[in-house]
Each structure stands twice: as C-alpha cells, then as structure tokens.
Image 1: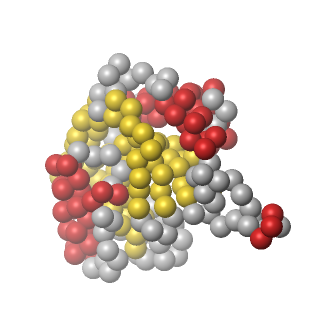
Image 2: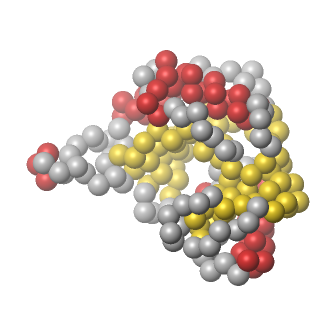
Image 3: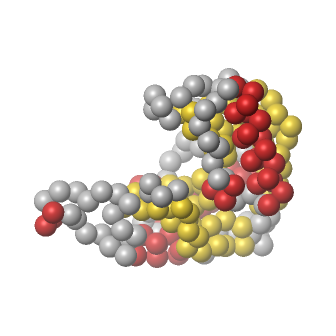
Amino acid sequence: MSDQMSLGGFAEAVATDRLFFALFPDEAARAAIARLADDVGRQHGLRGAALKRERFHITLHHLGDYAGLPAAVVEEARHAAAHVVAAPFDVVFDRVKSFAGRAQKKPCVLVGAEGDTPLQQLRRQLGECLIQTGLGKHVTREFTPHVTLRYERILVPEQPVAPIAWTVREFALVHSLLGRTEHRIVRRWTLSG
C-alpha cells in the first residue's frame, strides 16, 4: 500500500486504485441484470459490451482514486463501516436510462425508487460515520441509486422494465484496479440491526 509520488516527487502519480463502498446483487438478480443489459443493447442497437456480472453493483460512497492503496484511508473506512447499524432491506429497480457522461462513455443504468428509502438511509448513515472518522470530504449529498449496465456513445431514453429486486444483506468496501476491470472486496459488513 502506497501514497508515493512518481518521478522523485515532482509529478503526481497516475491513479491505479479506487476505493468505494458498494452493495452487490444476489446471484438471481445478477443474472436478471445481465439479461436486461443484453436486451437493452439489442433493442437500441448498442455496440459496447455489457459489464461483467461480477461488476454489477450500487455505489454508496466513492472514497477516491489513488496511486497505490492507501492504508490509512482503508483503516478509516473500515472503522466507519463498523459503526453502521441497519437491518436487511429490499431494493427494486424498474427503469433503464442513460446518464449524460463523456462523449463516448455514457452510462446506461438500471434505476428504481426515489425518496427516503432504506437504501438512502443506509447511505446517509454510512456517510455520517465517514464524516466522524475523517473521510467527510468523500461524502456527497447527490445520489441516484443505480446499477450500471454498460457504457455507450448514445443516450438510451428512460423506459420501464420488468422489476429486478433483491434483499440487501451486506455492504462492502471495494478496491477497484483501474483500467483492469477488476474489483477486490476488502471487507464485507452484514446488516443485522
């Protein structure tokens, strides 16, 4: 784990690692999301590939991109997560749309209920714990719960789809290896409150 600079400390190192908290769908939901991603691609003539099943997730809080995995941030994140108390809850996603993104990389996403849902409450509680442990600069108010299906050049208009649901029983701290499309679970926390 490293926080070093490249070129003898004169140039900022290239980010190779990302940390974030996430929720992952269960296997049945993951399979349904994969089918939907393919269906949406065919329906709209999309050319990009759908994300791999194991990468489908809901990001709760993005903790930054780094050159190396910073041990201090990981420890503070683990400390914050240990203070979250929440019961398992259900999530339901029933619409597909695109978020405006970079010219060639617009996320096509699965979205669901809005408002003060248990998912929003979990995210808010985790954010408060992150603030208390010194990671408050990573906590944002803006949040649209979603699962990214694929990245495309064109915008997919919002449309209803058959609901995809699962029970959230845990959340995880994830280490993403940037450019390698690989997610490694640092730690999971069970929702039992």
